[in-house]
Amino acid sequence: MVLTDDPEIAAIARECAATMSFARETRTTGDFAGFDKVVHEVLTRYRAQGRRFAHACALFATPPLVTPAHLVHGFELLWADAHLTAVLPVLRFSFPVQRAIALRDGRAPMLQPEHYHTRSQDLEPAYHDAGQWYWLNAERFLPNRELMGPRSAAVVLSAMEAQDIDNEEDWALAEFKFQLRLDAALHEHR
Image (cartoon, rainbow, N blue to C red; front, side, top):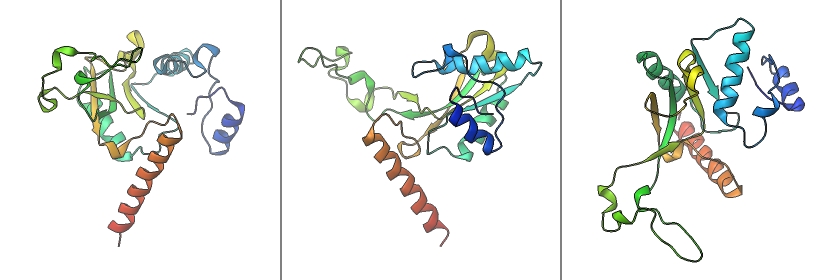
């Protein structure tokens, strides 16, 4: 099922045999619509049509490095633990966030100065959402719309398995990673 408010995207999706049950509401369109609100809208509108789902997978339209293996692993994690609300792919920050620096009025203060003398290898690793997909337990998700939290699990990706694309440099990195994956697959089949 493809959910969009764009008529051109909807037409292409239909040509590719995708289901278009309804268009997105105005409140869940645009660059600042929360993804949790979009998924909530889809599940509640289907529910209003008499259709209920035990699980749902929300796959973003643009991440070029998603793999079937990670999607399957995510669902297996969700299926195995009835207490989970969501499973999502994550990436480890390349450097400890506890030693982050802010840039304010030409100055560079640490955000957590208590870690000034802490060695980076002694700090707890931190992760961020890879922005590729979410597996959801629909019944647990609907009441609170929680995608990340204590009832979430993660599939940890390597830096080569995801790329957020916000600018041309990000696009070039995504193409580079994709080409490396393609080259490795071709080399493996030789």
